[in-house]
Figure 1 (cartoon, rainbow, N blue to C red):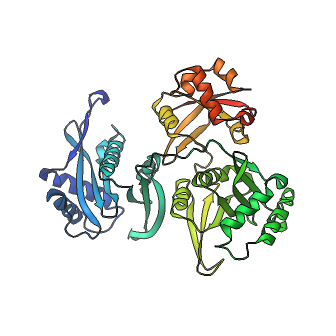
Figure 2: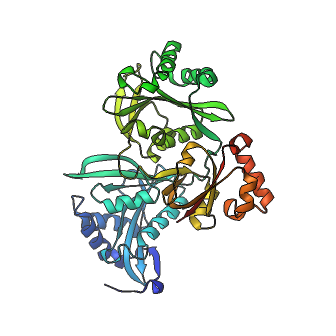
Figure 3: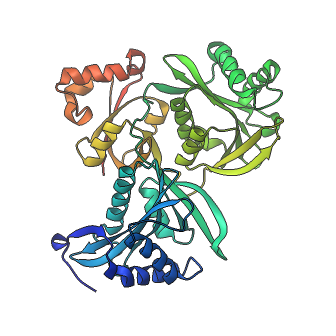
Length: 447
């Protein structure tokens, strides 16, 4: 084992050469034998041969090219990654391994993964994916921290008694919808009923039989019984997504015996609204039960959104609600580890500025969800397909933006602004006066 001072270490990544086979074969055999059956040396020989022979996979049906890269620590091999360019526009990691003596040091795994993402983008892949044994918790947590999403789990997949998780990370999708002007508010029948009815009937009726005006009437009537909290009264909780004071989304929740909560319907006019509703449902309903489940016929982008927010598919109901329609059940546990961490959606430029340390102040207006934030609390920032965790150092509250900018550093709030006046204009553009009146909350964060 080589011992280095961190300041003297150089990690470089290069293509594998002929002389690297023994290192790759030994690494794969030692790392994979606990989780996968089969001849790992033969597997190493097959992928190494494809890499050396012009990266061409002569036997793979969907495999187009195969590459192996080696991570060197001061010119000593410290890890490897095998990347498969697929004909369907994706890249598979199979596998990524850091040598035991270097694990947890020098960021080798992170550097190999970053190399894989750059490689995949150069090959115009829309997605990077891999599988990880459920028992390999260190690798699973590492990939989840790096923005991979769980696609599912297969039991006894590569070895009896070992389950396999499937993960993926979307690439090249930097455009994040603006979510800052979407609010979630409790249902007000006088204010929301007509628009909510129209939205429900237009988005739900084709996939679920018997969704008609009488069905919506029953929904609204059950909302009036919500104060009883009696599951036998079949009461409903209804929340409305508003944008420019218009109804753009509806979610109806029914607490059940045993404390699960059924979500149905969940309708939204746009991807951004759906994202806001899915991201906020756990917070809105945490005090009413122990898990959430939704019945839905999702589009691919809705599946991706549910997975991005840690929902998992639980069942399929062919023709359960209507002929020729398969309804899916997706679930979310409110009790599992990590759910207590609050999430906050944030635009890409602000996310990048916070994660790089250039921005330490995030400004929000006083919705109930913001009022519940506390100093010292971890906060997961999410931006479309990236996420990172910061800690809330302090929270300060002002009555209006002008007062806030008189006391706070505008450069730390809106780093792209050229002056305090421009910062004020940008804030007013995001939050109109009726929202500013809710109060201005300055959230100071640290990594």
